[in-house]
Image (cartoon, rainbow, N blue to C red; front, side):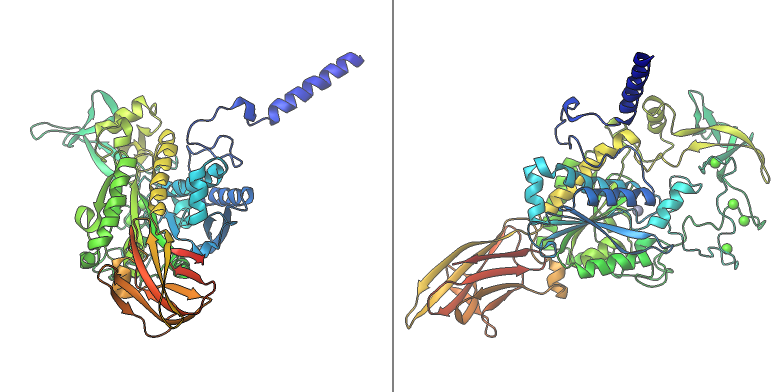
Length: 580
Ligand SMILES: [Ca+2]
Ligand SMILES: [Ca+2]
Ligand SMILES: [Ca+2]
Ligand SMILES: [Ca+2]
Ligand SMILES: [Zn+2]
């Protein structure tokens, strides 16, 4: 009796242990190169998270790594959701607001969701890899990341939780009367079969221009000019809800474009389709703008979109062409071309030239309004399906082949019959909303990592200032000349051309303290002894810019002997000092 009770208890104990052991022990794991081996915060990167999921992940990262991560809200969305920012840096090494900053956001377009996972992956990777990766330790000692996983949480949740297709909604959720009949959202898409997806409607028609691909019943192909088809398309799933003779003419799919709302080159709706009321009329964009204004140390930015496999830079507005000149383009091109190497299938392109003209876009405000070197990556490219060029068109056969052989037909809803109130007997079918623009799960982590690597490279090349040398020369009458060479060892200058042109940020300040300064100057050419004197406040020399991969030379005439300190204070280049 006793023995059997013991036995039962031990079985229960073993079962309980097995049940609670939801993670492997460290001894069972062999580290894969370049990945955190046994992360404190376990996250699967082969799925998507809604705003509640994002909130939980941000809080877990901040709780697990208080010396590396902090989470706070930068404002509220239209519906009152918090816009979280993760500040990632080595908080034990210096004041974060004085380190060059890299800003990252995602999901400005509601359906362009994976930028949020890519942004969170970056925060997760930087914190989880910190302890055993020297490169990350050095990076976070010098730099700070501001990561806002979604700047459109209302739209994100509506994309996930409401019936949609892969392209809807692009807008946020503020109601708009699209067709000006006095009603809002009176005729949206309709999820006729209640499966959460909006797909296509087709109907048998002896004069139709489409037929079923004989090798794949999911795929519709357009018939040739001398061929007869047997199907017609009736558009996206839905019906005429308000009986005005139009189907799905007023929903929240595209009413305004949050990426036409930014205060640089903004144009009203009749010129720029999608502009809302006035620059920063959307609360989410306004919160981002205010955050960026309060963080002048932000020198670099990335705003993730989908899709197409692009590393985009501005201008979106061709009127800004003049500002993307000379030194700035060299920086943009060097980083952008490195991106093409790190991101197979992605191309480095210019918005206005390679895409379309767009006014009031986020990346133009970041660069135009704040002088910040900014890219927008269009995430996911059909190239990733078979690691070769393919079109973005979901009707392309490559998508069907990929779905069939790699996703085992999980991406497509097979055509099935439906009795439509207006069209009669129809069929409904097509790709689910999670395919075509969003990554399939098994490719999500891989491309998140590559895009993160690109943002790390981008961040690495924000300015890094050091006082290279301090030399002295005795002059007569107890005076001496102190000459300092300040170098910037990274690609980015402390002030972009745009910044210099519009005097966005104050000059860099190079101060000699601890000695009596009689005069100071910037040495323009040491060999030819050409310099320009700064007549007022000679202790602190104002330098307009410290160029990327370049130096500035400054000189003071000081009286007396003793130690003194030289301090460099740059908004986007950080601070550094040396005592002598
Ligand atoms: Ca309406
Ligand atoms: Ca449906
Ligand atoms: Ca209607
Ligand atoms: Ca409808
Ligand atoms: Zn977009």
